[in-house]
Image 1 (cartoon, rainbow, N blue to C red):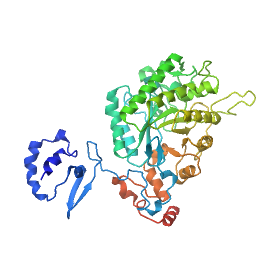
Image 2: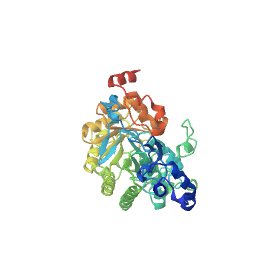
Image 3: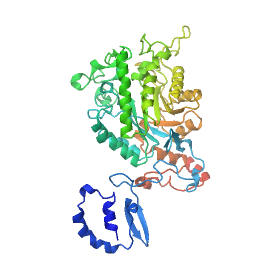
Length: 483
């Protein structure tokens, strides 16, 4: 029998904690209990022999700890042969393939700033926050806005670009590897906060009811901020509570482009599955495209072509270094008053959907795989008509203008049937959830239950989803979802 040497070679034993010479004499008597040799491949988990059969709690291969293997991966719709109700899958649970990467479903987690980084580094909070989503069946998870330069952080506690390999190896890679071990696709949002940098975390500058409790919204040097080192296309502050930015010189913009390229290289080393470029919510790239924040008179200001020039250069730089799926998040409107374009002069008054359609077309030419359509964030007096799906019409407009471009939609999407209707009606191709994912981190499996489809939960959570995992005829599944 060769079981004992095989066991020692197995990855299920951590060599750093094993002293083979001490282990062998104690284990040798146990060999008499085994009548069958178990090959190394079988020892990928806990093996139990019963009536000549081997039953194995399989482990995820290639990881240094025991993690049960989920087959199929979490969030995947089961075969219709096993579950008849899956004969006609809802759009939410149809796989999506972009540039050779297949996402199990079309329910994506939006990037959400956590204001919890330690000197720019991810912490255990991020591991738990992202790891929780990775075990609950989302088609993709996008990590929060991560600045390509230190001064581009939104707050002193925001994530900064991967400047140090120690940061990459000890912090991000741990999160990415855990997500991959559970079959999740994980990406990161690269960003620069522009004139909205050096601000307090939300719970520092305002109380739980949203009332400001600080004299300004930005952190001074003695609070870890950098208000004298904030940059934008023009020297226009977001509001009187924000620092006045310095206008970027063309030389500084070239340095910015190199920073984006270096950050992209770090993404490759960490093993992310996709990158999202943040060009929304009033941050640097949004500031360039909007006439409200860009009054430059050089080749980067004035006309629509000029205002989108630098953001497109950023996209081009990232795309050149990145061969996996590339997303771009945009704000499709500034939510300012009046028409987007002056009817008398033809001048663009603020950033809106018509210009966004042009930008989306240019992004498509640069091989962007998905446009994540959000709104707002660049105009302090914006008036947003909040309602379920209030941003979906903007995504729909982009989809109508560019039918062959994958479009994501966001904004008060809370109910599975609501989300399914947007995809079924061709208004978007994927839905991004943020606050709703926080409120209900099991949302993909909950959606499966509501839509009458059988989807794989994590092995450890199956007992909570017996209703999802009961085979039914399509007709019976429809009755269940109505009741």
